Length: 76
Image (cartoon, rainbow, N blue to C red; front, side):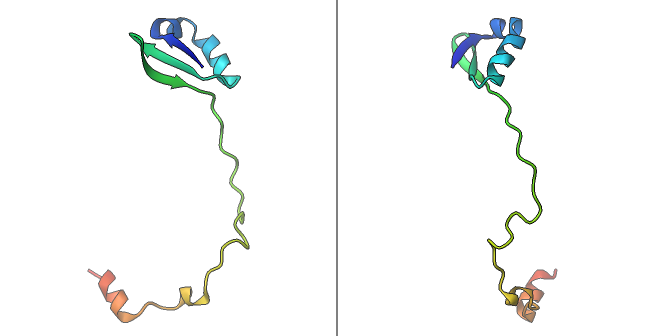
């Protein structure tokens, strides 16, 4: 992890981005106090339809109609 001041970060932003891409963490400080952290971006994986198939079970009673008392509490 390297700590740089704001002026250095503005002057050498491309170099700092290359370091962050390589996995290094760069802390940007103002007057010696850490203000921001520059880290590499890790995109999320693509969502896959049916990824939880077979892992989650829903009881058939889930689809039964709600009791009248429950339905009336949802109405305004």
